[in-house]
Image 1 (cartoon, rainbow, N blue to C red):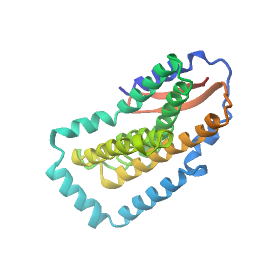
Image 2 (tube, rainbow, N blue to C red; image 1 turned 30 degrees about the vertical axis):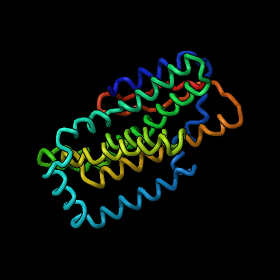
Image 3 (cartoon, one colour; image 1 turned 180 degrees about the vertical axis):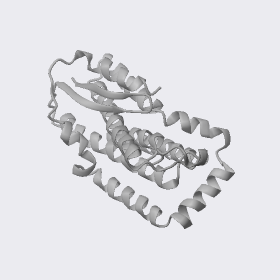
Length: 244
C-alpha cells in the first residue's frame, strides 16, 4: 500500500511540463506559517505535557490499553488505515474526478499527496534521529517516536478537514483517532508517540490545505512540478508533484 504513494504522484504529474520548486519552502513550513500552527502548538503542548508526566500518564495508559487490548481484532483495521490506505483512496478518487471534468479533482489529489509526503518525511527523520525504543520486542526496535501510522492518518484527516470542512473532517478525524488508539492497543507505540504523530500529520494536512485555498479562491491556476521527499518504511527518494 505504501508503494502506491510515489506511483500515484507520477501518474498525476504526467501532464505537467514546467518545473516549479518555488513553493517547496512554503509547503515545508506550512505548519508554522499558516493557521495550522494552532494545531501544531496545541499538539506540541499536549505531547510535552504527557512526557513530563510519563510515569503517571504514559505508563498507566500503556498498561491499561496494551494489556487489556480493548479494540480486539478491530485493531487490524487501525493498522491498515495507518498505512496510507485512506490517503491513497482519496487521491485516486479525486484524480478520477479530475479525469471526468472536476476542475478541483487534480488539485485535491495533489494536495493530499503533498500533505502525506511532507508529514511522513518529518516523522521518519525524527524516528531515526531520536531513536526511542518501542514498547515491544524488549525495546530493541529504536524507531518509536513519532508514530508513523498516526502521522499519515492525521495527514489524511487534516487535509480533509481543511478542504471539506467539519462535515467530512469529523469522521476523518474519528478514523485517525482510531488509528492512534490501535497503535497503543497493539503495544507498538507509547501515548506520546501517537500524540506527536497526530500533531505532525494534522499540522501538515491543515497547512497544505490552507496554502491551496488562495489558488482555488482567486481563480488563478498555476502549472508546474514540485519536488517532494518520500520517506517510508519501504520507500525513500524524491517524487515529482504536478500542478495543473
